[in-house]
Amino acid sequence: MPELIPILNKNDIDHMVARVARRISSDYQDRELILIGILKGAFVFLSDLVRHLTIPVKVDFIRVCSYGSDVSSSGNIRLTKEIEIDVTNKDVLLVEDIVDTGLTLSYIVDYLKTFDPKTVKICALLDKHERRSENIKIDYACHEVDKGFIVGYGLDYNENYRNLAGIYHLKL
Ligand code: IMP
Ligand code: MG
Image 1 (cartoon, rainbow, N blue to C red):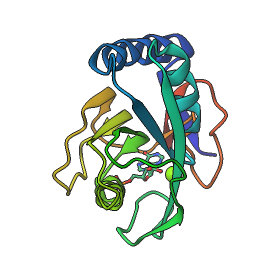
Image 2: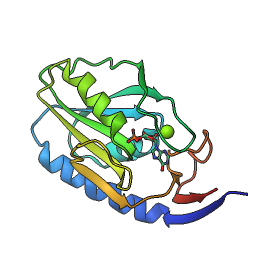
Image 3: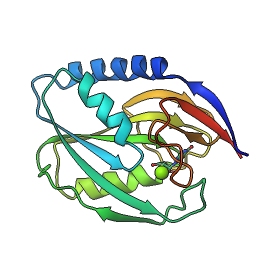
C-alpha cells in the first residue's frame, strides 16, 4: 500500500494561500488581471486563491498533456485546451499546482507569448527544486519542497488523491 506522509494540513494551506493572495492583490492593484489555471492539477488551488483576492480578476484555463511515466513529465508536451479569453496587452498570471522540471511552464509561457500579453507571471502552489532543468522564474511560490512525489489539494498520482484537503508526500 502506498503511504501518505503529511506535509501541510488544511490550516497551513489556508494561511499560505491567503499570504500569496495578499501579495498578488497588492501587486496588481488598478490593473486588469487574467488568471490562467493549468488543468487539471491547479483547480483546487485556483478556486481558493480567487476567493482570497481583493482585486477584480478574470479566470480562464489551459490544459496540456505530457507523456511520460506516472511520476515525471517527459517534456513531450501537447496543448489540449486553448485559452478562451483574449490576453493581448493584458496582465496574465499563470496558476500551476507544482513546478518540477519547468518544462510544462516554459512550454505554456512560450504559447502565451504568441498572443502578445502585456506581462506573464507565474504563481505556483509548490516549487519543487530537485529536477529543475528550465530557467524559469516563479514569481509567487507558496511553498518549496526539495524532492519526492506530492499529492492532495488537486495534485494526483494516476488521477487519485486530488480530493484530499491536505498535501502529502506519497511513498510508493
Ligand atoms: P514539469 O513540467 O516537470 O515542471 O512538471 C509539471 C507537471 O507535472 C505539473 O503540472 C504536475 O501536473 C506534474 N507533477 C510534477 N511533480 C509532481 C508531483 O510531485 N505530484 C503531482 N504532480 C506532479
Ligand atoms: Mg498532473
